[in-house]
Length: 195
Image 1 (cartoon, one colour):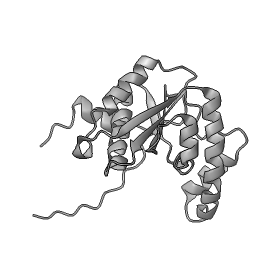
Image 2 (cartoon, one colour):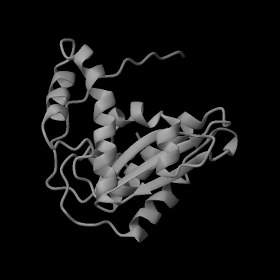
Image 3 (tube, helix red, strand yellow):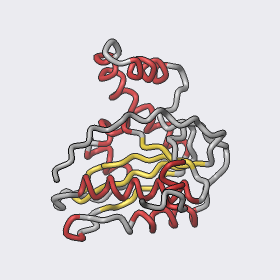
């Protein structure tokens, strides 16, 4: 049987989506460390098609939150009766002053080269690698999938400084956690064995 008590397994099993952060800055050195770790993720044809847009400007993060909320609220309106989670998230986004990025001090948008055939998958693996690296140094993270719709707008990406020919794949927030959320129940996956 595999050793289930090593440090890597511990980091994987203790990582949580953090949505409450301390008002403490993360150093550029730590962000560079996380980006370096993300660069070790596997990629199709070893193209390493990722890039990283690091936003630490609080006003810019809040402005982006408002833009993303305008895109997300109509989608959630259509889903609110089908999903309790969608209804709760909609209620949160409609609250005055709500921040889609939960007050995190850093937003990193991983973008992928449009010409790489597996860019979306590659960047998703880089995102998970980055989030696990963050967990290993006590920095919390969360993938903000709700921001994705707005970030598909090439004009907005260009305004943010992303290079031409790239698409946004993973909007990630980072910060020092305020508390530790309980682990959600795990759903038994469907597994098919072919022997």
